[in-house]
Length: 181
Image (cartoon, rainbow, N blue to C red; front, side, top):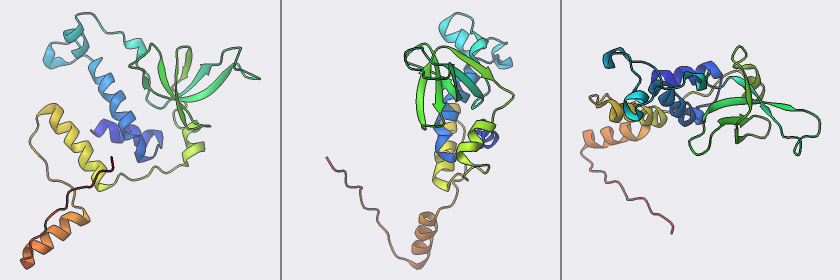
């Protein structure tokens, strides 16, 4: 999960984008040769065909999506941020930073040298810090995938309150969440 944190920090994106980073880091890892598998990629082992590394780009890099003649008024290309590969259709998932929307585009030109310039304009220069709950969720995703032993959770206010009530002898019960139907 270190890759996800590094990608967020490098891109200067807020913490809410960690699921997007996780999705792409998993995709990239599946397309990367592994020495313990004697250098085939996990994708090759599952699908039986060699992986195409041309689709790998720097996560959150600036890219320019072609705007069809029907939709354009002035520009033929519009600047976007790369989020990953579309699972549903053949194309790239991009963030339209000016409208803050996801788009899927097939015709894209990448500028991997300028990864943070377009993002910094929208979100500022300092990324948000991940909360304790977000960190715990990221850690649990990594343990499930790798079957690693559990690591201690980051202490939250709820954990502190639970420990305090147990030390005093008060038994706390958690109420079930009510779900509106």
